[in-house]
Image (cartoon, rainbow, N blue to C red; front, side, top):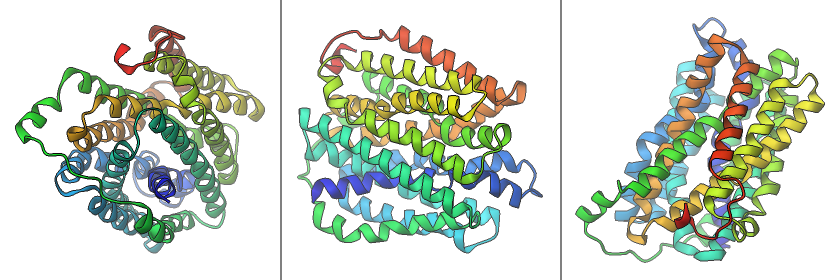
Length: 381
């Protein structure tokens, strides 16, 4: 029951962005009288990320000082209220405010759930569970993106109803989650160690990777609708396919980690992602686009698993909540800045050029990181 509860909890962070992806073009059309609505509609995905970036360090502090479960249930309440608000209001700015509230909830949920994984599991069992977690998130992404796409066919408002789903999870969460024992520590020592060089490198890696990978939910819907005349349901299906490939890849994390080290895994994943994005940039049919999405999904499948495994192995138990909070903060700061970075390139060139640029850059970065270097420990990074 504990594993099920954790899987459901971590799946909510996937739901936070994916549920309304397919309806973004429809919302842009519905609120067309608002200046810069195409950029603002993308902020519906990324504003929650900014709130997570701001509030995750605070949630990490609260988690370390007052316990994990209180943060879980506070986060769940904010998530449901803020997420579902879009169905009940017509004002775009109220919807945006609801997304901000939901983002605060995600900050508490993601920080607490990641810290609990570190508390409940160790060593290979942790690697195995984190691979399962990522696969489960991928499956959840398929359900939420596809469901959001079909609900968007009814209206742009209906995908927001998906955010009421966590209410059904409460009995499992109450039964499966428990508060781990607290570790005594000195706050001055902790504040200093949060910014050790090894942790700063993790934070920056999280920021850079999410800037790169978040182009899938923020830019692919517009690429498909503008260049391939795809419906919201078709957009959702394509992104769900990439999520399915991510889930397949994530289930192999424990096996891959036994063969090569963290750095080599990052290198491999960047190359796969880069190949996929490059193919997407040059695709002249949906069949070729799906081939690109396959490589893209394989690359993304283990990326967050690898990052979180590296972070949890590096973080001492007494620092786990705060370092998790800082890492989550930089992950979601990258989500927030991703469309701003992307839009800058699009303004100079176009969407296919953006994909080509990021694809080639990812391939070279992967090769630089030392593709297929063998090893077993994150410390060898």
